[in-house]
Length: 539
Ligand SMILES: NC(=O)C1=CN([C@@H]2O[C@H](COP(=O)(O)OP(=O)(O)OC[C@H]3O[C@@H](n4cnc5c(N)ncnc54)[C@H](OP(=O)(O)O)[C@@H]3O)[C@@H](O)[C@H]2O)C=CC1
Ligand SMILES: CC(=O)C(=O)O
Ligand SMILES: [Mg+2]
Image 1 (cartoon, rainbow, N blue to C red):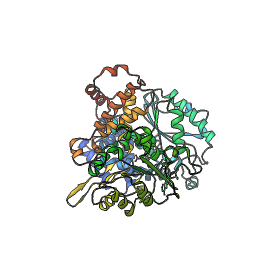
Image 2 (cartoon, helix red, strand yellow):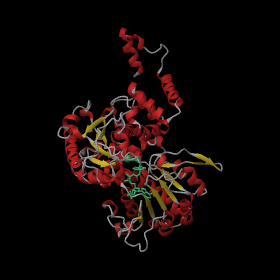
Image 3 (cartoon, rainbow, N blue to C red):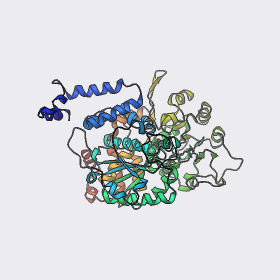
Image 4 (cartoon, rainbow, N blue to C red):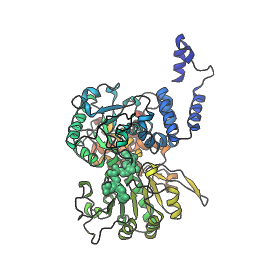
């Protein structure tokens, strides 16, 4: 790209001042860009730098991202993307996605048609900014979450950049700070009524299908009630899924399949006796709890018996069926067998439930105190503790603390990344239980199979494929997720499982792939991936 630029500009005298120096080389320039990135001491500055690099030289940007996932993903994605969203109106430089505003109601199709790569559109990540990570309602500042997720599709599954469509629905915000900010980038109004929003969403989805006929829609970071509502409303008529409910469910099921094996080996308890306590019962907590039913079903329990192995906690304590005014999404796991005064203290709840696993999706920083972790360790030789809230500033417990407090026995995965560390001459390597491991493969498999829907079995099979993707070294080190630098290989395996599940459910639209053997199909999937410096992919 740089070399092509140089040739073009040497031939154009008026651009002469923009010719790179004569000894310019791509390799040196890559090193220069990494050095410039590393010279920034603040996460947000690094984000701004990378964003500028993406605009100046997208090929170089994606090539660097592809080769430096462990360093760059925490900047473009959680945790730093959280800072970028919170400050987006102030750091904004250029348009990088589509804003569809509530004022566009009645002409959404027209607005969507302004996207420059309409015919290439394959995957859209759509947020309404109402629950960005655990940071609350950020309104139109939520766009970087769509951009960041799509960068992971590009780097992690080889989707061509011009096939990705980042969208933020600009519907107002309930956060006064943004409404008062003179630089706020969105419309200054409260969020619409449920009725107005439903009308908007119905028009939006119909217009999306019209304008982008081959598109997969990933709903992202909608507030919990709307996340469940629109998934239910659209999943049977459009090619779509909800990342926070289904993607998170799949990624946690996958890590749990590996974690439970380690925990049961240490305790001698059968897998079916795993007892899971969810701290947080929003879209993510309940989405994961529903997906974890599969764990018990795979191990031979009925759905009814599987449900009995799961307990949920919200801000009011253990969720029981006798609670007045319980929100719809909490009813499925509300316990009918608890008798006694409401249980509101987490340690009391742990002592009552005696869970083998404690999963945090609560946005409550440091909620898993030493006493909480001690209570888990008292019941389990190897407790499973997954603090999954994002970003790190909302994580329920830090990795080093969890390791220290359990004398190294914890089986751990967090939503945002932690770095490995040494303790008593042993290296401790954390897992990252984040939907970023799963949605690229789900998207790739859905597109390749030309599926009309994303079914529950496609999501479940994606999860099992991820769990099975650990290599020998990762198994020996007792990791519960594979290392991120293998993401393309992993996405290909997930995509294969998704294609097969789509075929089994007869929602696929690529009949020729039905007759291709697994090994050949895996190779085919890898060949379809876009590489920054390689031939064009089909997406
Ligand atoms: N690792 C990953 O891949 C993913 C992580 N997440 C993270 O999960 C978190 C939650 O997301 P989401 O479910 O959509 O958010 P919600 O706001 O819908 O849910 C938060 C839940 O936590 C509960 N909660 C809040 N405070 C407390 C408390 N003090 N004690 C116990 N429970 C409490 C809430 O209770 P109540 O219902 O009573 O308000 C609610 O049930 C976010 O930080 C998000 O980043 C989300 C998706 C993917
Ligand atoms: C990871 C993610 O999707 C979230 O925290 O919302
Ligand atoms: Mg999300």
